[in-house]
Length: 151
View 1 (cartoon, rainbow, N blue to C red):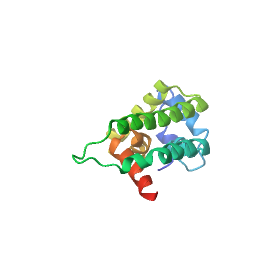
View 2 (view 1 turned 45 degrees about the vertical axis):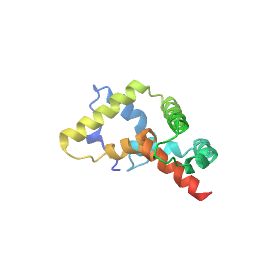
View 3 (view 1 turned 135 degrees about the vertical axis):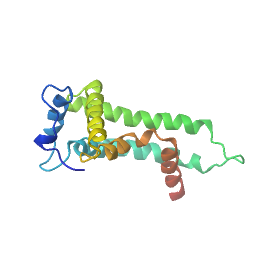
View 4 (view 1 turned 30 degrees about the vertical axis):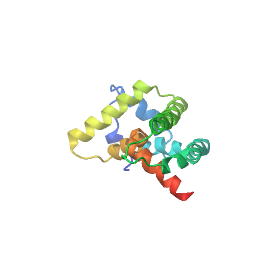
């Protein structure tokens, strides 16, 4: 992801400016504040929590029904998996002193700028894809089945 420069920051009167400033404080020189947000998902406790969750349930994803349908428990596990990511997102925002509404406004600003300019120099779409990957049921199934195949 490309880094932010003064010319790409929101105008001071825009609500997104306060969030940009908070994220920019944690951004290494030449880096993207979006990447610094995503890097917080590499937290060792969070990684352990995800790894343990997946490992403890993966064996159930080897069971395939004759008609190709999925067990109801898989949907419940996906909900739990999503909650782990949501909790981490809330924790990151809290650590950064950013409310959920501020973050949504900031992301809306990034998206509108990317749409308006026709370029995504800030890496917004890659950021959004990374941030929302846990929401996709098929991606979740792929994670669970890959872990099940290891055992």
